[in-house]
Every structure is written in C-alpha cells, then in structure tokens.
Image 1 (cartoon, rainbow, N blue to C red):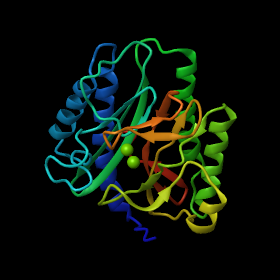
Image 2: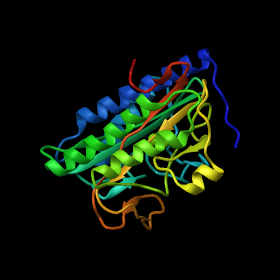
Image 3: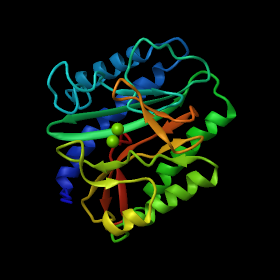
Image 4: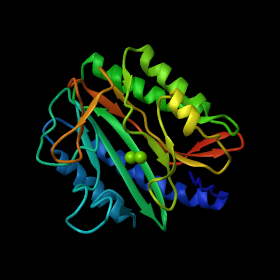
Length: 260
Ligand code: MG
Ligand code: MG
C-alpha cells in the first residue's frame, strides 16, 4: 500500500476540481424529473464539466482507449442498480431513486463525488434510504481525524446503516484520490477482522480519500449485469450511493466536493 500525502497547495488544487464536480452534480440534481432519460442527464453533466475546463474520468475507464471501457461520462444508477449504471435511453419514473456519480480531472487533479436523488414523489422508505446514506457520509466526515484507524470510522458507518435495517455493500469501496482517480488506500464502509488485520490504515494529515457509502435497503449481496458494469442488488431492493472527496486536516477533515 502506497499512500501519497498531499500538501496544502495540492489540496487547494483538488478543491478547485471538487468545485467542478459539485457544479456538475447540482445541474444534474436540478434536471432530475419523471420522463428525463439517464443519457440526457449524462449529457448535462458532460457539458457542465467540459465548459469548466475539466476532463471526465469515467468515459472509456479504465484504459481510456476510445470505444473501450465504460461508455458513459457519469455513472447513473436507478433503483436496484447500486453503482456503475450506464446512462442510456431509460426514462426516470416518479418514485425512482437515482444516483449520479461524477469524476473529473482539472489541472492534473481529480475530484469524485456522488448524489442520490428521489424522482418526483418518492416513497417514505426510499426517502429514508437516501437520508441514511447521507447521514452515513456525514458521520464519516464528522468522525475523521488524524491518528484514528480507518476501521474506527468505518465501524460507525456500518453501525448507522445496519441500525436502520439496511446493509453496506462489501464488494465495492472508496479509495484514495489525487492525480489519479483511484489511489491507495482502499476505503471500505464497513469493517471486518480481515480488514483490520491486513488493510487498516491510520488517518494522516494530507490524506485525500473518496468516501462513498453504498447502502442497500435489503441484503448486502450484489450482482454485476452482463453489460460488465452495472452493479445491482441481488434481491432487487433499492440502493443509495453518496460520495465526497475529503482531505484529512489537523482538526479533522475538509470536504473538497461541497462547492466551497
Ligand atoms: Mg464516484
Ligand atoms: Mg469514487
């Protein structure tokens, strides 16, 4: 595991990238309504971050050879789709739960963030699912401080999710981020004896992490569809996914993708 720490000025540059992601996701949130297709939302995202001088990190991921890899500019995942949904002709329906995940690079530095939005008039259960995912991310933001092992934060996140009868995805986790979108360490939203023995790490000033709770209303088990990307819940229950890019600071952490 090779964790790169970022200087104050590098973190400020990452905040500039984070602002682009924030603006993009705000535009997407405004666009969400019954009848809009996920590819229309994806196009709004592309136009927003491109106009701000950024390049997308998802299109053709991981090789960035045109025509290969992930086909969208963003990941848009609806209802039982947990993460990595491919934008397409699907029109959103009233009551759907939709997540939009956006990663970009600006002046050599990456930002990565995701929101989950209820379409039209979502059910109270779906609103609760979104709220619990957002609370779980906020709990991490409020808990991070240098010197703590990540497992201490992850344990709180997992406990919050499970206290509402929901579950944390095991197969996909957050990550370090910097000049590249995916850097060490791996940043799970749960802990385990296995993680604590082999992969736990101590939070340090200058670490920049993409923390991204993926919460399923039902069982934690997921399946990848034949398109090779879309991750769905095995029991078809809805999921929510929210993410921020965070920098560890002497007093705790700073959210780099909150638009400030
Ligand atoms: Mg993301
Ligand atoms: Mg991420």
